[in-house]
Image 1 (cartoon, rainbow, N blue to C red):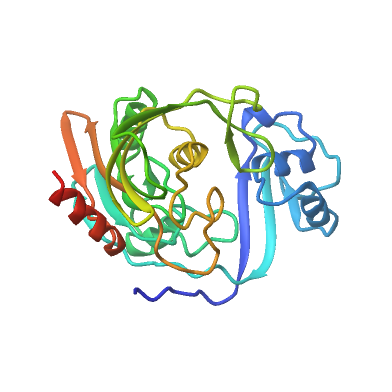
Image 2 (cartoon, helix red, strand yellow):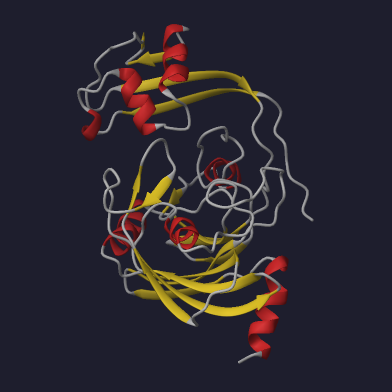
Length: 302
């Protein structure tokens, strides 16, 4: 098992510009809505303690924000969660650099993570480049993650994602055994409170979402699925599979996983095909070891 890296306590400072959709929000509502890993009471406490500034001045409770305001949050001396900081490059050219992401580690600073994030590590390894991730992967999701090396490449590939022209394929290790070889989950996804997603048409700001699933193999009461998301909603695969009774193995949010520091998680971004200017790129990322018995069984049963 790979040893996780723990950073020494550091002073954590977060900067963000207020996006247009939050124009006119009271400051505590802005932080609670946009950064929902803390509730309104905790954000209010930080404002009252003078730890948040707006445009260089100490923020006040109830202060109305405008689009493009610069907020600075001084979170104090904190110890980040341990992370797997090793970088596994699987492809690079003058436009992109692709990695087989480990876990646990976020793509960019979020929540309690800061230096233990891929973008911060890449700033150190490639100081002459700006890390530009063109997609999202959760902290616990392994597999393909692509960083554009130029602003132009980032804009092009992100437009490909927006137009749904990028092919993505995941391996999901789930609890339970499906009754069908192939099935589709077509349920809208939205939020009820905080950052946790749910399915249902009546959920606030729900968006359509579709996921195609193929059952590959089972060992005991756990199964390997090949999953193809046809839309790009946050936590889509985890939410959809949990909604039909197949939560991702060791998912502590949508399943029964425990937050115990284990490195075995059940979602892996295996394959990706996309266009970068005139070049078609197809990438494949080797799955973690705990997927291998299921992959071998799936091969035997073909």
